[in-house]
Amino acid sequence: MTVTADLAKLLDRKYENMSLTELMKAPVSAMSGISEKDADLLRQAFNIKTIGDLGRNRIFRMAVDLADLADHSK
Image (cartoon, rainbow, N blue to C red; front, top):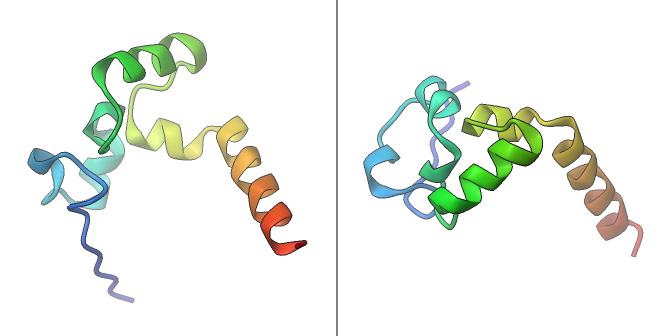
């Protein structure tokens, strides 16, 4: 299945045309709204270096799951 998405609002300009495989290896700071300082704090606290690391982090995934459950239980 082919999926298209406008990543302009999610990523810094120089990362917008990368493939998903490349994006998973890109630094967390490639995401819009995450500064180099933020990325450094994520690296120090959770050893998160890439977008893939962030997306696959079990703690962040649990938080998303809990938030989704809370939103759907209203």
